[in-house]
Image (tube, rainbow, N blue to C red; front, side, top):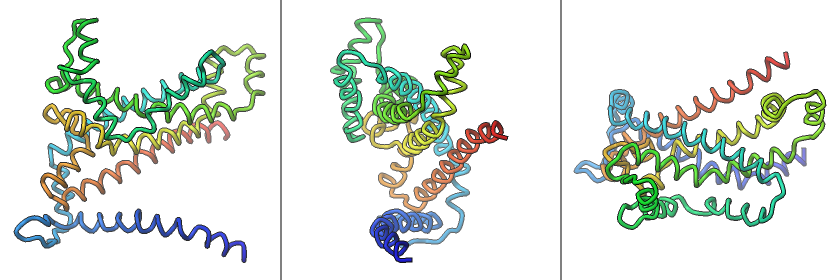
Length: 292
């Protein structure tokens, strides 16, 4: 009994911080989402309108377009980060000259704030002064202008996200690979299994929990991407890179539509939870079937 009280006492500061900065703001956003509220309008009071904000967003073409663009962005970014992260993790598991230096350089993007990442990529992709457009033009004769081409802007935002967050995936998978026992691999090699068979039937099932946790983290981060994209493209050209996070930002701040922006935030949180749950069930179901 004494140990339980001591445990709760030690957890109390953390629970208090989580409650004040996590739970309380969440319920406040839910409350605001059921109101029409523009604090800078002639009437700054909250006006209760029930589920009108949620009904409106179902038929909001701008929101639906941003949701579709976000799904595409998250899919290509997270898949690319997983593939590159695993390949780099396997590479860093081996010894080669300059390994420590390359690992240090590889992890540097993680210490950069998202708004700094967006600023750096903005400078690198500006047609007049950016190194990327100049190299593409001199090497391949390709004119890169993310201010005019929707496809180019989308691809650059994906590449920027991959550059920023692949090191996180690499570090997570390195930790998972280092902790794996060697007996299953030796047994598989004795049985004549090839590298592909070992990967699918030995390595992947054993690192599945780490992969799942990494996907959850990256999925939640990618769905709420705002800073980098807002600094790089501003959501343009047109609405090509107006992802959900950018759409919420523009609804809440420039248009000061706090009620409708809060409703979008609640729906995005709900969709994120549903997608994570589906991934969790989808990855665990084959393992449970195999055990049965």
